[in-house]
Image (cartoon, rainbow, N blue to C red; front, side, top):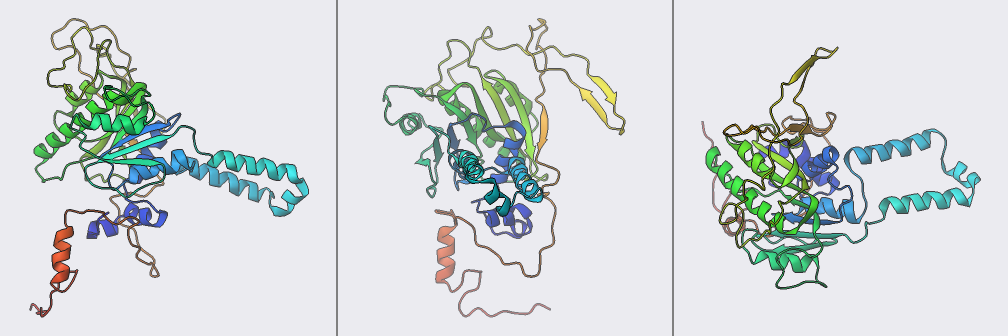
Length: 389
């Protein structure tokens, strides 16, 4: 997490340090999980472009430690408060006897019991501080040599050096990676789409049928083409904007569910999609026909548009076919903080340090040179402050 003036005003930046998250981006994954139940039945996950590790930290605390956050955590607190109000305090527990205590302890152990067979692998070019239960790899997701390293990390006991796919495929592949933005939106969107394409090609090698894929995107002019391409290998493709993501940012997250590779398709980073590997027209799922949208005015005055189901039907043979539009959803409870709003701070507020300082920031050398010059905040020895009138 940075320390710019915008970050200091951001509620999620301060909240992440208070709750022990490595970065504010942890709330993006938590809010996506609230909307799509990403972690339901998941035990094997690959986190791409993982540094500094906030998303891997979420996976570790949810899948391994069994903690609950967001709406599920709120419901758990409400349940405890209700029990307290109804008089289930310590005195009544003693009266209830040892059986009630044992039952409560079993429920608590079950709540915090880690899932069996959890395997989490995090990959990034930058070094990342270790996390409990997470295997960290320093590798390039665009290079074919990353696949054997990843497969060995997923199944160290049954690893086959000649294999090109996982012997025990993973349930979920996530990617929060983004390039260093230049401010030129067309260039940034293109580079981000290529990064997402590299993450997808790697995900094709390790995902199991029915698996999920979540990745960051930059919404641009022709982003619908990217959604249509994802629809070829996934049953459902939706776009989500978490409440913790600033509205001024063009970022969003594509959530793909129901991995269904075409028959006979074999994924490989040696021949990734978009180069020599092409899907024949007969293998491509055909998009649904455009149906007339139904319009309804609710009692409160809001207008609802029903665009119909996302079912796939036969193409009508017209040139170009039908155009498919990915559903766009806003994630996060309305009671949550607004990432673009500024909140008043209490006078007795104490500024906290980041949970995990950057391990190898690109500006590390500049900080060292500034420190040698006499200060870490731009002041050097012998420098005199001049009043500007």
